[in-house]
Image 1 (cartoon, rainbow over the protein chains, first blue to last red):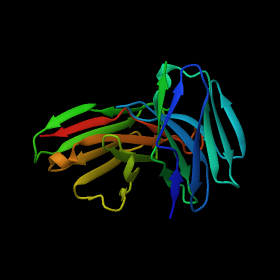
Image 2 (image 1 turned 180 degrees about the vertical axis):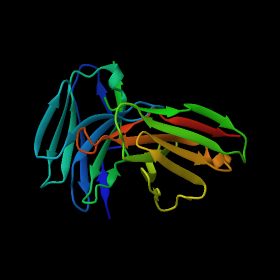
Image 3 (image 1 turned 60 degrees about the vertical axis):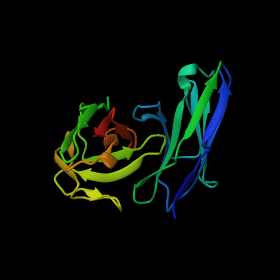
Length: 109
Length: 117
């Protein structure tokens, strides 16, 4: 079966750095996405990785290793507004998007 | 770019009535739109994939006669919850793929909260 694993919940301190991991086992791979979802709102697109390596976008960076079936989202200089769920999703060989259950990130002052 | 809207944002209805939710891509043409449902504190659940001009593809366990999907144009898809019951109360979210953007990225509408009394 197809599976995406990410931690259920993480806690970090304002101003710090946090890394949210995602591992996947899918039938084929056509890209990995990270989305942010604030409570009660729809997800918003953060990043897309299809090649190995690190993609940096401001305070957020996303890393991919296809050989390991692994990605992480790195958030720097954490702000209270970063408290949200972070969803990892992978396109399989048929471009079906497989969603992880999301990681709830709690930021403490 | 890649803005998706949904209407209404909130709907409260009586059991047995039908509710229509609209999803529009405002600044791009979306050949494919997706409908999701999300219960409180749970992950997104794909209900169906909607392709312009053809029948929607429903996920296993989703009743196509209860959740009617119409994708009549490249910018509009509608989801109709027929004969709604309290267990249909949920957060319904649509998304659309922007062919001209980042590889098949799905951009989400703001969601519609449905409460069936």
